[in-house]
Every structure is written in C-alpha cells, then in structure tokens.
Image (cartoon, rainbow, N blue to C red; front, side, top):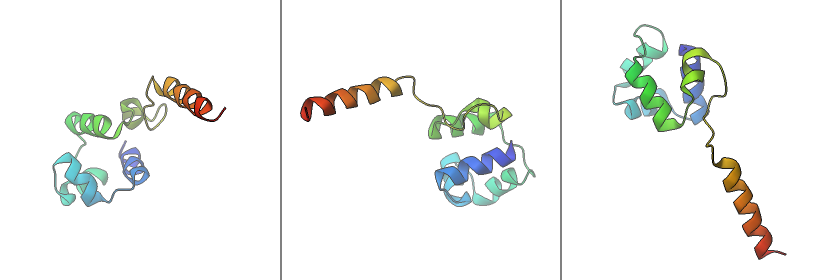
Length: 89
C-alpha cells in the first residue's frame, strides 16, 4: 500500500510537504508513513480518498483504477457534446 500511496501523491503532483498539509501532519510524519516506519491509519486513508477522489480499493489492495470516476461523468460529457452541437450546427 505504501508504494501506491507514493504513486497517488506523485500522480497528483504534490511534494511530501504539500500532501502532509492536507492530512494535517508534518512532512516528517508523512515521510515515516510513506517509508513504512509508521502505519497509514484508516483515518488518513479516508481523508486521502475523499479529498483526492482516490479509490479506497486501489489504495488499500491495488485493485481497480487509482481514481474514482463520477457515475455522472458520461452524462455530463454527453450533455456537453449536445450543448456544443446546438451552438455549432
């Protein structure tokens, strides 16, 4: 899980210091989590998943996609295409 945590952080483009601020901890504490010295608590797993739209299943077990896609994403994309077609017939 620690490798996936690092992958998520890097995919989002954050340094350890920036990511730690979102969790409300110091960079040193976060570094200890990422390096396996301290465990990543369920509390922080939930914060990461909610704040960054990360799949909990991916973060915990490595299964599925890294990020959760909205169930309404397809509908929104279809709506945008319809709106664009109406403007530019």
